[in-house]
Length: 413
Image (cartoon, one colour):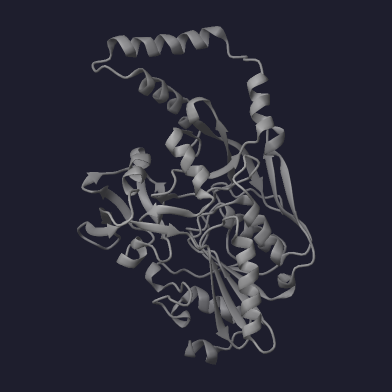
């Protein structure tokens, strides 16, 4: 899928520090929708428009500090949009361009996915191989400063911009971590980040492991390639597979549908419900994928959100495999990115997606079939280069046993 406006995205819940300022699912609006919106007559009563203009003019003339007109208008727009819900946002030209760049997965930064949670900028996951992971920043850490400048949920866009910069330049993060009495300080060197969303490992005896850190245009293709490689590693083919969606904040909607389709031979994957035609959709599985018969277990946790919840929910509703771990984040709405003048845009909630069973996950999440808590993110296997062995990951242990991996072999991992 290209970067054309006909692309459909479910952008990550978090914000990739140094990459984008998205906070939720998104749909890039197509040209027809924009033209229709422009031709639609205004029904806003004149007295309401007059009231808004009166307030803006009062602020211009009487506020204690002089406010630049552009800033004043942008603030008014932000107020309108952000009052709606926590995911609708006004995007200035830079933030809008970030969203368009995000689908490529290439940027310069420190490699952190974060989300605003309880007013704090909280790490969802450090990206594999990025500066943040290499220096030891963990899921659940709270970013409290960038280069000694305090941050919070109200200035996350500014935080993101400060994280970006020329590769090789330095930036310092202040971090609060559960159990630490004092803030931690990390000095990082910005780098070119090429986001690799798929990691795999052959665990022996016909069993494979595939981890998804996000959903980009290439994810489904990479999952299929990884599965083929794992299948070739076994003399008799794959007898079981673990699909790890833990701390996966989301990505491209079509990629999530394609990944689910790899494992489901027929039926609904996800449905969208909204007021406008473009917000109402159905995505269905097609038969013919080689992975549709391989025994499967899906791993999820609180950091699994948006597109990863679509995959986990569809597989669960189709009884395609057990879902193991902890309840997911619960992000079930879709935002449409609507371009406006001067290269700016608004990201507006236009749809809610619904699982094949008819359930909505908004604020609820996906409940695992088998709950296995693993509160310590340092005890999570991440693939071949992980510092944690598969046998030391409690959630992965349970998943492997469910698909028949022997206890003896598991103890040797």
